[in-house]
Length: 152
Image (cartoon, rainbow, N blue to C red; front, side, top):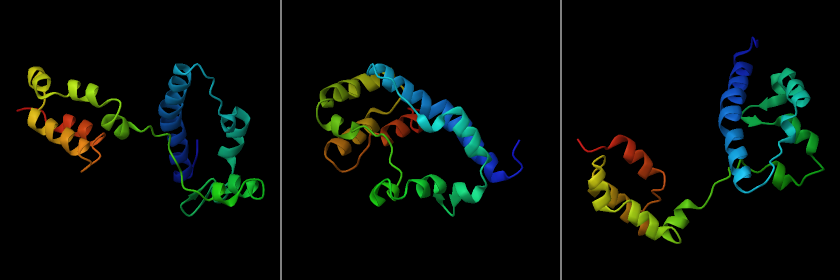
């Protein structure tokens, strides 16, 4: 479909990551809040047009959305046009130290972890303690540790 390898990568990113991950998350999150999410830049005609643009209008070095940023210059503040990409993170680390602390401690209690027999309770307790004491943000590391450190 696309002869240029970079255009192939961009298309794969759009079809796999955007279509099968990001848009699914948007849909679920908006439905949970009884909201309707809109993605105007994914209008079918617009996407078809954008995929046919030359690469130098899509990317300039590592700078993405070059043409879109150029088109919006003077309409949006430079602080918006030049800011780095920002995700839709939620404050899970804060919640685990605050309103969800007791629930987390219950779910990850050494007794419960030992009863399930999948993970080393000492490793999990260490991750929880480091997180609660502020030594390390283990909201993601805990999940990784669960995957790679099952009890032998």
